[in-house]
Amino acid sequence: MKSRIPAVLRQCNLSTAAICVSTLFLASCGGGSGDNASGGNSPLVVEGGSGTPADDIETSQLLRKAATGTSVSLGKNVTGMQRVGDSSSSVGLLLDTSPLESLVSLMSSKPDEESISTDEVLNTNVEDDIASFIESLLGLDKPLAEVDRTGNHITIDPDDASFCEEELLDESSTANDLADCQSLVSNLLVEVDAATEDSGLITVNFAQQELLLIGYSPVSTNYEIKLPAVETLLNHVEQLDGGSGSMPSMQGALRFSATVNNDAVNAESGTFSISVTEALSIIGNDGTNISLQPSTLLSVSSDTATTSASIEFDIGALNAAFSSDDDADGLSTSVLAFAGLTARMDVSNDGDSLLVSNVGIGNGPLTLTVDSEELIKLVMGTFGFSIEGNTGTITLNDNLDFLLSAGSVNSLSAEAPTGTALTVQDNGISQVLLGGPLLMSVVDDNDGAPITDSISIGVGDCFMADDSIDSVLPFVAADCGL
Image (cartoon, rainbow, N blue to C red; front, side):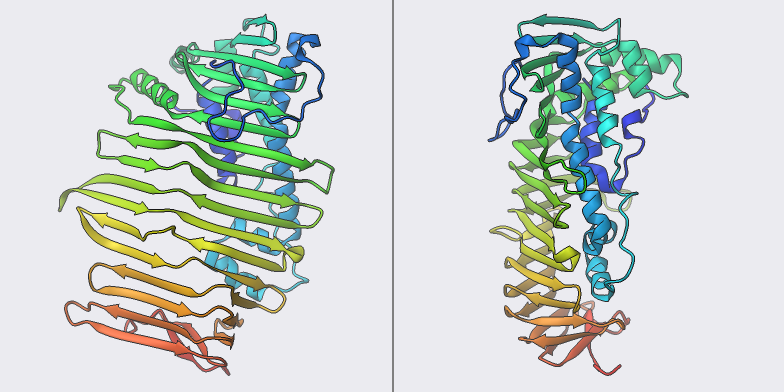
């Protein structure tokens, strides 16, 4: 079966990847448990409904409210982030450039410069697109969909042909594509357990396995994807394509959550997050072996009224092994491992202030090994820093203690005490204003003839990047007057 891009995904881009990934699973599959269960420590259905009992509401109205409820929190959060981004250069830069480029660009930006628009980054049609998709999944306005209700428990067998033609396939799809798609969709059964008129739980089952749980209410939406059912789905797709159906073994669950704190126009505020709610395990026949502990992969909050925003990572222990077959060296296995990855960024002051905190790698080193030989090892103490856009000043709020080793000989280290402040000039030269010294050293194996070099930058001293062939240090002392 040819892969098609669902209509709901056609306007997605890199910066809305989190939203698109969740939507992709919706578009790839489609019912399950009838309880208010949670796949993590927090419930899927968050209180905040109208309070009107579901018993008193007609079935089609309950389903339409459910479809709207699955998308409204996403749409409000997207709108809020867009408005903050439009009025804050630092948020725009964080979304639009690499971290290093963001810092450098922020230092050289002027208050009267035009703000970076995020119109192309955040899609304002997410809310309508998802609502339309869920309406089709729930059989709304689809005469061939089978809908049954017992109390406040509703089961829906979607209209396979209509769902495929309108949501999963495009104009270039063939009759075979439609037949394959209908074969997949025939395995879907959707259940809705309505708590109130506008809150409840949607369970999407594939081949009698829970694939997707959606808890919805006017203030919050939670999508939880169950990987065992994803494995089953992918095996079905593989078999339809003529393969053996031997996809990687998958365990665990991922949750995408969106909460609205304020939905007033130009004052939107809320939070969305991606988390691992059940430990992930992906094991493939090709040597792939990935495990990730329950944790918050990403949490983003925004407040349009105050033009403030935060982005936070708190990733749990990871062990990821991959095998590759190189014609020259044969089969090799690479393993990336760390105890955790953490960081938080807070933007305030109309985007002029950026606070980065809790940057760390947990209780152990981050390592990359190939065939049991350690190639990279990172040891770093947790630290943070702040940036003032108006003055172009970066200040360490914790000690900087960083050591990167490559193999048994090569290494790069950097150290600086709390309170060290520096500024980046337009010409690329940085100057230490307070605290210090900033110490950097490097050891280069140099084909068996090790070279050691170091630099110490004190108050008033300057340095700049050095990418010359003869240099082993990434930075070199510079004349502040240049």
